[in-house]
Length: 102
Image 1 (tube, rainbow, N blue to C red):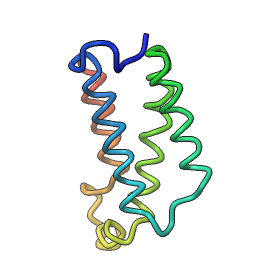
Image 2 (cartoon, rainbow, N blue to C red; image 1 turned 90 degrees about the horizontal axis):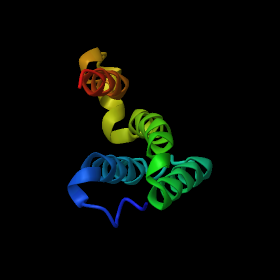
Image 3 (spheres, rainbow, N blue to C red; image 1 turned 60 degrees about the vertical axis):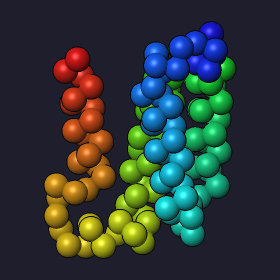
């Protein structure tokens, strides 16, 4: 079953992650790697075709979003100030913990 044919609210977190992770590629446009785009695109396409592949997309999209944010000039200054609470990696860990509590 394709996520787009089901109720939108059922897959709201999938679409939110897809949009936010796609935005990280735009933020890191100068340093983005072609293999990251290919991996992201293929995993998104697989999860779009079958809902059972959504966990694969999540495990691919979250690290790629973190890599893009770490390499971007816009967010690189945050890491240079050594404020660990604002690190994208820390944010991903907090999201994982929050989602596992449900």
